[in-house]
Structure formats: structure tokens, C-alpha cells
Length: 216
Image 1: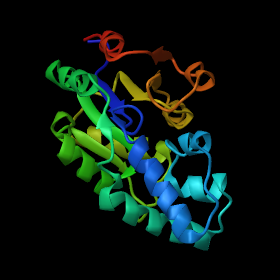
Image 2 (image 1 turned 135 degrees about the horizontal axis):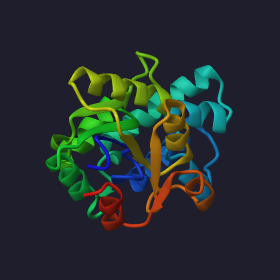
Image 3 (image 1 turned 135 degrees about the vertical axis):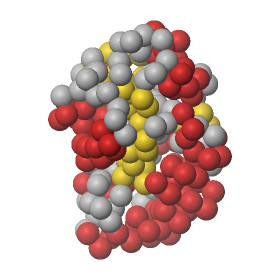
Image 4 (image 1 turned 180 degrees about the vertical axis):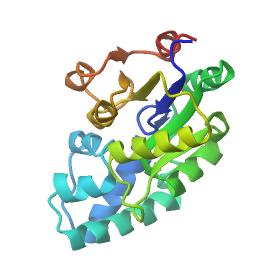
């Protein structure tokens, strides 16, 4: 077994959430009176924590950020979350990893509410041993914090953490993995770009190659 544990990003890696995320952002900007971004700008909003998108990328004040978050989440949970689709073949790789004895955990900047909505709808949560999610109340917002939470949860169920890899699609996945000293591979079907892929331990072009990379 090449790896004992795999951490999985969600948006852009397992789930193409772009249509619903883009629509939720557009509705949010309309509701708060903010100019609409270009499609290219919208693509950069997938990956970072929502708070960082509003605060750092868009320059909102703390009060504006909190209001935008609340408006966005209402739109997202009221239809945006399910305006998405699974990337073909990825869940099958996750299932194969679990069947081989590998422990799987999500490591996503999405909160547990959104994860539950999409996970139950698309029936992929059963392939995971732990759900590493963001949580504003717990101040668990960055990918580094989410990975810490996932690793602690896996350790708590006796997972073998001797050989861990993170599968993601953006620079934030790389930054979080490097902080923890674990390997990271980026899939190229998500929302990253060649500059980001070059910083990973591997860039993977298809689910078949992902399975091969994981030693399945």
C-alpha cells in the first residue's frame, strides 16, 4: 500500500460545484449591491475559505464580510449546493481506496452543513472515515486548520498516519499540506492552473491516473 491515509478536498476535486457557487455569488452580489465579477474572477473564488474571499480578495470590512457570508449561505443552501455534479470516476477511486484498507477523510473548506447536503444527495459520505470540514464557531477556517482537524479525528479512530497524502486542486491545498509536512497532489480537472500544479508533488490528469498514483 503506497499510502495509509488520503485526505480529500471536495470542491474542484470530487465535486464540480462551480455552477451553484457562481450562481450563489452572483445572487449575493446583486443582493448587497456589489459589482458583478467576471467569469475568470469567479473561478478564483473556488478553493479559498469564503471569509477570505470576501475579506482578502474583495476587500470587504469585517461587517460587510459577515453580511455577505450570511447572504451567500442562504442562496447556496437554497438550491446552489445541488447545482453541481460529481467528476466522473473520482468517487469510484475513493471507494477503491477504502476497500484496499486506506483511511479516507475529507479536508474541505466547506462547512459541515454544505458537506452534508451534497454528500447525502450524491451518496459519497459512506466512503469516508472522517469528515474534516470548516467551522466558523470553532475558528477552523483555513485549509491548514481543516487538515489539523482531519488528522486529529483520524488519529482518534486509530488511523495509520505514517503515509498521508492530500488530493486537491488549488494552491490552498498545497499550503495546508506543506504546513503539515505531508505530500500533496493536484488534480487538473478542478479550478487550479499550471503554476499551482507545478508546486505539487504530482499533477494528475484523470481518475485512472489518480488510482495509479494512489497505488490502487
